[in-house]
Image (cartoon, one colour):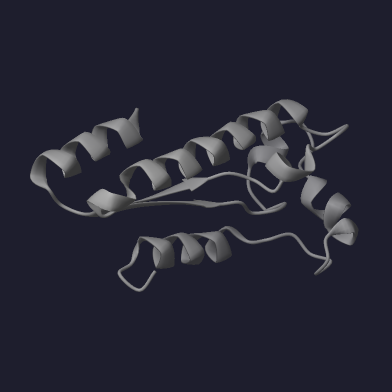
Length: 115
């Protein structure tokens, strides 16, 4: 609904814009035995964002998706496993979970005119 609303606003004004949606590497990996429902919803976000990008590019509206891996956020505690980020860290190529600030910086860059 937010994307729909902002795109309507930008197209009425004839102004460019940038959207960044947040997905997860789980959309590609499937998250078996962990969060398959979450992975499916994030795959939908990715498909939706690709469609937006292609549909509105000619109007100067950019759409990108950031798909982080395991990140130190409250989602793990809310799902009942507060130590999950540390548990899965050995399976991550850099052997550590991501930090929210790292993802925020990528999003800020994608929203900037430098992207």
